[in-house]
Image (tube, rainbow, N blue to C red; front, side, top):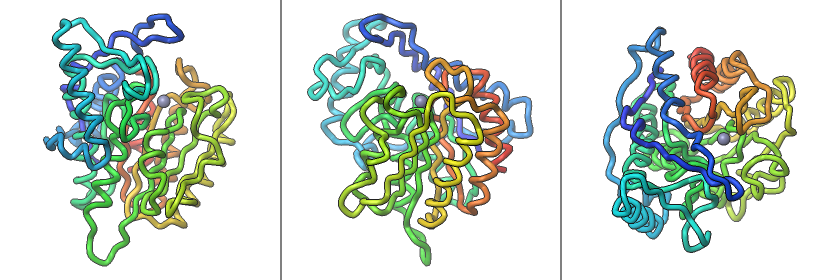
Length: 329
Ligand SMILES: [Zn+2]
């Protein structure tokens, strides 16, 4: 196993989330990843931690609209010129390319969010180089970012960029497909959208029902793909209070779909907001369950790139990460 960590993520410090008109101290904090790093340092994983490679921002256009990149660049510049303490929020959604008021832009946001994408791309290249398992400590997360819109604390879709890289580099004698398994408690609307019309990526998600979870408008069972992608999106929304036995049943169904699909690689969007007690959660998983997730994924026999998505209690992210690594290894 390799673990990719980018220290520059610490400079990404969104300050405010506006929740139903009220300002809230932003929960997507550097401590989320630093807690993982600190716990890894005391384990056998310490020597497996490496830094990311640099990739040109132009690669973002493999997944995102060029106009979205222009938008990010211009709004970040506006925030920077307004002052170091300034944050830019979307106001009118279609023009401002934002799904919510929880995902502010600061002067450095574009650059630092691309840093997280580079962590994911490095992970993809490690798999292409023969590594069987990689854990990419991406921050900010990515699975809510769509081709042309930010949201849910996400700016670039790290999982989609990694899956695209794995797809775009065919190897002789092997199929060219990738499965994305999204186990954040929130539906990965961005990843689903990006791959909705293709049969080369199977997107499977287990998440809180949109009736009580975020986002409220996507992640329904009826969303199954379109065009040649029909049948290649598989959503399993679960009720609030879901515990391991029901979760494991859904996981087995997703893994069975993935096994039938027969991908060359699996990208795991792993959130720890499924951990009991998460402020944005609602499921009741515990550390040992992330080890079981890792074991079941390993049993597929495919190389796995696990990416950090959400989870807002640093101690739980650290405990869950350690368990996931043990399971995957
Ligand atoms: Zn989440």
